[in-house]
Image (cartoon, rainbow, N blue to C red; front, side, top):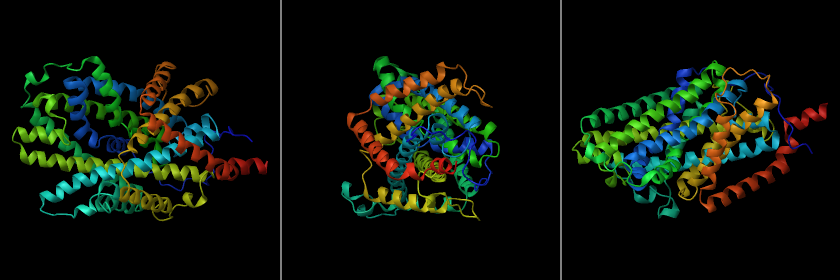
Length: 461
C-alpha cells in the first residue's frame, strides 16, 4: 500500500481544462480582498483594542501581517510553479504524496464549509439590523437556529442560497458581483478614514501600551484570523488567464492592501474614541455615533454586509474548486467533477455544498465550531510552508516564475508561527480537529485510496 504516491507536477487527470480562463491580476487581487476584509475590520479591531492591546492594536496588526506574509510568499511560489485548482491540497499532492494531500483536502473542506456557514450567521445579524432601520421586522423565531432559541435562521440560509445561484451562473458573473461588493466596502472604509482624520484626539492614544507588549502579542494571535482568506486566491489557478504571473500578484497584493487598511483604521479608531469604550459589537459605528455622524454610522453596516457577502462568496467559490480537484483525482465521487458545458461551472458541487451549508447556517449554532476554522487554516498554511521547503531541496530544477525570498528562513518562520498559534488554541478545539481528521482517514481507506486515479494508473501499468 503506497500511501505517499505523488501526483507528478503538471499532471492532470482531465482532458484539458473544463473551466474557462477569464480572471486577471486585478480580479484575483479583488478576490483576495473580498475574502480577507469581512467583519474583522468592523468588529475585531475594537474588541482587541479594548481587551488586549489598547491603541497598540496597530502593532498587533503588523505582527499578524508578518506571520501571514510568510505563508503568503510560500503560497505565491507554489501557485506560480504548480498551478491547478485545489490550493494547498494540490501542492501537498505534488510535494508530500496522496495521504498528506487527502488530510489537507479533508481539512480544507471542513474549514471552508464551516467558514461560510458561520459567516452567514454573522451576516444575518447585520442584515436584520438593516431591515429594522427600514421598519421591516422579521419574527425572532426566524433569526436564530434551535440552539439559540429560534427555529430556523432564514436570513443565513437565504444568503447562501442566493450565492449558490450566483455561482452556478459562471465565475465571471460571480467575480463581477465580488468586485462591486469589494469596491462598496472599500469606499465605506475610505469614508471612515476621511472623517476620522479630522476627529482624532491624540489624548486617546495615551497610554499607548496599556496592556504591555504581552497584550500586543496576545492581540496579534486573535487579529491573525482577520487575515484568513488570501489563500482562496490560489484555488482560482485554473481560471486565471496568466496564473504564473497573476496569482502571486493577487495573493501578495491583496494581503498588502488589507494590512495597510487594517493599520490605518486601527490607528484612527483608537484616535477618535478611547480604547476602553470599543468593546462593542460594532465599534466603528459606535465611535461615529458618539461623534454625531448618525448617517455615516448607518453606512458602516452596509459596508459590513458587503464585506461579509464577499467573504462568503469567495470561500464558497474556493470550496467548490477544492472539491472539483479532489473529485478529478478520484478521492471524492466522480459526480463532483462534472461541469456544465454552458456555464463552465461545477454545478452539482455548488448545489450539494450550498444546500449542506445553508442547513448548517439555518439550524446549527456556529459559536463552538468557529475555532475549527482557525486550526484548519493554520494547518493548511503550515503544510504549504513545509511544501515550499521540501520542493526546494527535492526539486531544485522546478520552474519557479515567483521565488520565495529569504529561503529557507521565510517558510521556516511561517511553520513556526503557525505551529505556535495552533498550540495556543483551546484544547477542545484540538480534540475536535483530531476527531474530524480521524473520520477523514476512515473515508480515505474505505473509499478514496482504491478509487484514486493513481491506483488506476498503477493497474494499467
